[in-house]
Image 1: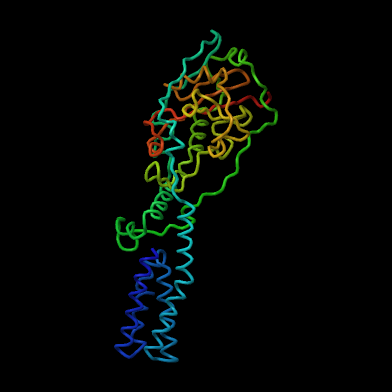
Image 2 (image 1 turned 180 degrees about the vertical axis):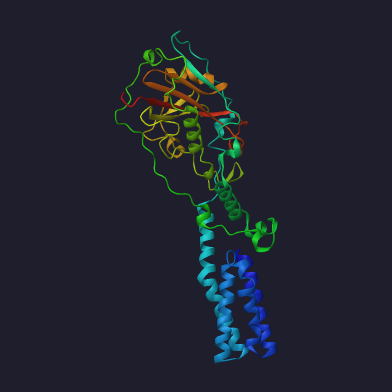
Length: 378
């Protein structure tokens, strides 16, 4: 809005001085300032504070000039000084902040980093398991976890609009925005775009989970979850939404020009659906389905963060993950339950909001989460 403010200030500067020179009276020209300060204050104070300050300073300068030296030439000098002070105090800092925001949210391309998605996903065949092993499959939910508005709220949409205004040009955005007058647009600020910094969330290694052999990992199991089992659907939904982080999507003009994107990450230990003292969350790992020649699990000391996993080591699927993965073609969750342990594999699917960057179809598998839960007394 700085351009609009400059235009209005220029009109005010010309109007007061033309009136002063023609009427030979400084006081008669000040009604223009009154119009700017009082007549427009109700609609410009929030969006054009620089122009409002300029009008107020011009009014004060005119009153002082009319009292001390009521000559149009002196008044011209004071109005120019008022203009420079107003834009030096508020206009220049806002322009510098605007320029800084543009540099900090410069466009990035996701084409190269997601080039592996061109390869079609082929899930392996399910390995044979013993007759006493029971894997519980939970059907896909409709709509999907991220399908409702892409998991986005008004803050996400406001941030996207602010980034669009920042990088598409203020004048064109103002002209093409719906609405009336200065209310049609706003000037993005750091508060509109900035997201809080987040530290990695380490996996709790206290009382670490003992390593299981492939032979024992799927031994036994229950045919159904007992009443004390956690709400696994809520746990997985909350984890996927936290990981996707819709507020950090930013403004996607196309795959090669993405502004203000924050990589996907888990920001907190998942606790949704876990009753106190019943089951305990132990570990969450990200399963890569597309990037590598075979599905693999990223190895990290922290809960999954894509910014940290770019070159992270991987491990092969364990026995449970290998048996459960083929079922994700139709189901969202696959569970192996014993008396004191739960293993869960949950799907991460492309929603409509994901397709701006991911070259997949809505509902396609992008990855999976592998969960470890156990009884607190284990």
